[in-house]
Length: 81
Image 1 (cartoon, one colour):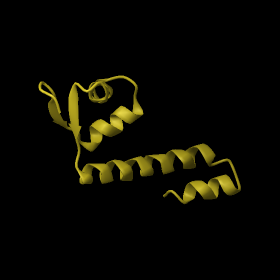
Image 2 (cartoon, helix red, strand yellow; image 1 turned 90 degrees about the horizontal axis):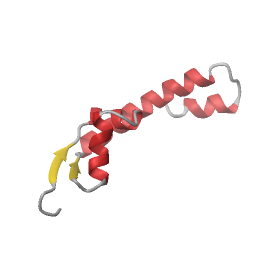
Image 3 (cartoon, helix red, strand yellow; image 1 turned 180 degrees about the horizontal axis):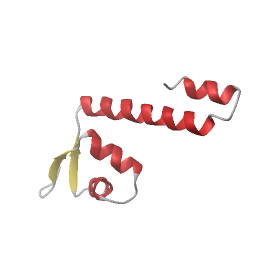
Image 4 (cartoon, one colour; image 1 turned 120 degrees about the vertical axis):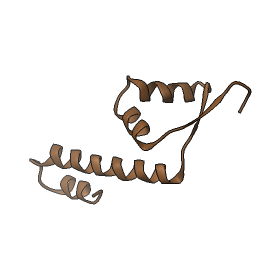
């Protein structure tokens, strides 16, 4: 970390919102981190929470998109729940 960089703790809501949208505050925070303007800090608990929430949302979305589909594709999505 060089002089002038600020450490910023990112909670799960910021990370999830940034993943879901290419605009808005959370996306801007990740853009600042990518540019090296801020240093993002997250805990293992936050990583776990993000993974759990993204998996839940992906399973729901997958189920909604593939509801009319029968066969292996549906079985593959069910394994993510």
